[in-house]
Image (cartoon, rainbow, N blue to C red; front, side, top):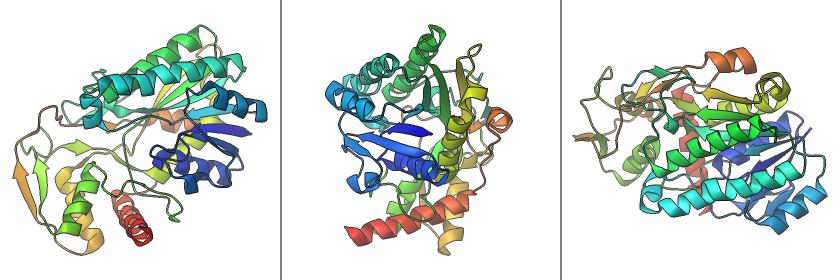
Amino acid sequence: MKVLITGGAGYIGSTVATACIEAGIEVVILDDLSTGLRSFGEGRNLYVGDIADGATVDALLADHPDIDAVIHCAARIVVPESVADPLGYYDANVGKTILLLQRLRDAGIPRIVFSSSASVYAGETGDGVDEGGRLAPSSPYAKTKAMVEQILDDAATAGDFRAIALRYFNPIGADPRLRTGLQNPTPSHALGKIMQARATGEPFTITGTDWTTRDGSGLRDYIHVWDLALAHVAAVQKFDEVATPDGPYQVINLGTGDGVTVRELVAAFERVTGEPLPVTETDRRPGDQAGAFAIVDRAAAVLQWRAQRSVDDGVRDAIAWAEKLRATL
């Protein structure tokens, strides 16, 4: 089996590529290296170019006419950036995806696995959400994910291909063997902010302490990136059992099935490091939500997949990767 991974030199895509290779799947990577690292694509049939660059995509498809499936990870992903530059995000994540999908359709590639996001859900209460949960994407980034899902649904219904959208929650950690990880030394997610606070000696700020969660702080479902990668492998391997001609478009949640509050994430960080982390508290920010966690029964049933790694594992691997990254800078 041969799989094309767009964005395969980025954090998620490179880890997915490693998991595919370990499962005996040959990979081809397409990445413009705007955020990805060339080193993450070395020895992996790396093509450097934009997903909307017709000449690059055509050359790749001509070189690899035996591609069985595409895992589409390429996207811009920074929520505040999407608020400041919505047109750029709609162009990069939606417009360019349409151009890519047209070429894949014309090349007769029948299987698409889309790395979507749980940000498409409402996330108002901190409760669990299944694939039928109410959709209410609250940022241009999240809206681009929902739009691409709708495009895939309609195109699959029209017979252009079959598709699986993997709605994953909050990835943390790194490849446990530290081959790849977050290439951004200052990530904007909660664990990244915690790690930055520890590095600078400043308190970590908990924004919002009056949510309807068990301790008042926001809640997220933190999934280890290696578990996430293995789910992508399972989606490729079981694709024809999941996305059938009678049901050509399917949505599957990926998460641990349990929520972790911000306070609990701080506690996990303290367990792993063996050191206390000073914190301060402030009001909610505009656009904040209580959060949600994944109900993962469908993933267990159709992919025979469940997350195996704990939040402590994710924190430990994230710290180890950050230390390795700093040593190379």
